[in-house]
Each structure stands twice: as structure tokens, then as C-alpha cells.
Length: 137
Image (cartoon, rainbow, N blue to C red; front, side, top):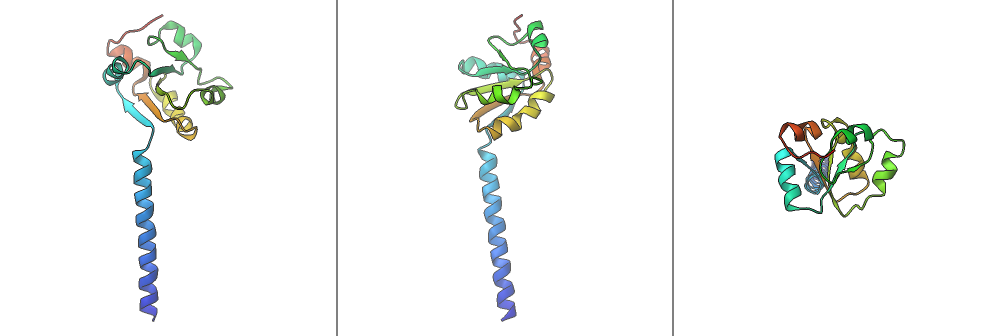
């Protein structure tokens, strides 16, 4: 009797573990964030002109140069989360900062708020410039 009970418990535990792993895998596949380098981001913007470039550097950094048609929301602003929360979650966004630190930190907020499609520019604006991509002032 004990062996059957232990076997049943082990079976339930294994099934629970397997279901959890499958759900985690499905969740990972639905992650709205994709990481792209400058070359891939440039191609993406050319192929999908409706993607919103979201520059989360300070207004001063933005004024010194930015990607064409970028929208600026300062990561350090007191209302940063509220401003992000006002954006259309159905649109696609290319998010970046100077080198990827601030924008990397912001990705959790985009996920928490339910954004469907977010591309993170790995290397940030510095990577964009280093790759020789267009900059506006």
C-alpha cells in the first residue's frame, strides 16, 4: 500500500513539474521582447515603417542626436511609467537608450503592461551610431 501511495505522489509531482515546464516554455515563446543589433534594427525599420522608435534617453541626449522620427520619453522622469502606460500596446516599438542599460531595465515594464511587440536595440544609440546608421538632430 505504501509503495502505491509513494508512486502516486511521485507521479503527481512529475506531472505537475512537466505542466509547469510546458507553461514556462509557452510563456517564453510569447515574450513580446526581441533583441536586435543596429543592422537588424535598421532593416526592421525600413521593412516596417509603422514601428515606433522610442528613445528613452534624457531630452538633452535626444537633442544631441536621435534616430529619425524617434519619440523621446525620459527614463529618469518621475512619470516615466505613466508615459509608457499611455502608449498603444498593440503597436510595435524599437526601444533604446544610449548603450542599452536603461532600455534593458525598462523591458520588464513593457512586459508587465502587456505590450505585444517590443524590439530592444542592443548596444543602444551608441551601437546605432557606431554602425554608421542615420542620425537626426
